[in-house]
Image (cartoon, rainbow, N blue to C red; front, side):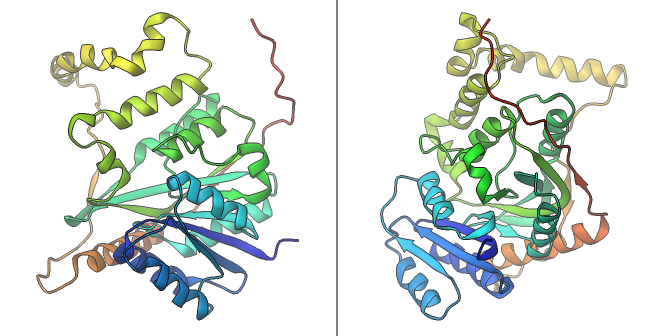
Length: 333
């Protein structure tokens, strides 16, 4: 039997102000049957001393501060250190709704065949937290996988992983930047039992140090798109092996062809009164700017309040269907 019910695994690198916001909330929320495991990649901003202080006070249960080879390496170390039945991934600059996370964990305990659980994610901009968006496309992705077993991507912030299921899912890929995209493409291509919670389990705080923003700076404006396409082409067996299909992730030729046609398509759909996707819905958060308030603290506060209100207004439901147990052997054609 596991020593803890949930292991919260946190990775960080040179983001002490953000980390203090995250751990301050997590430490306050932690219960006796939960542990906090922090893997710092050798930060030079006082993170190690801060973690040592928390550990000495018994507020975090395990930590390591040493150079690593990226976020995936840090998470993998933390998951191997974890002693909980379930692992909850925690990033160092985002917000999480622990009551909903605990209810999701309870669902997984009631359904031991569930390997991984995901759920809704929101986002605010650090520079303007007056509105939030919901990643509606991720829930739609899950539904497609649920209905057709199409290989899809999901955001990693809500993920809960059964520790013993790591033998099936594998760890995070240390050669990728978008490690959640790769992980979810991988698990949806395998016989992994995945459940979905309709609750908002986490909110992404887009900020200047966000991996996505850093990855796509300057000449690398399409870096995330190219990496994601490369992953999908590897895992999705429905994609052919022709030269054009193999070159698509390298050159982005389909996007080049589609871009000039989109305005005409939208005008045609408007004339025909066909509903079009308008992008993520912007939902007001009720934030009132305060020149004297700390911007980072305000962003986290807005997220806490928004998740609480979002989850209070909507029924919390779970979607899950167990997959048959069989072998991975496949006949080559």
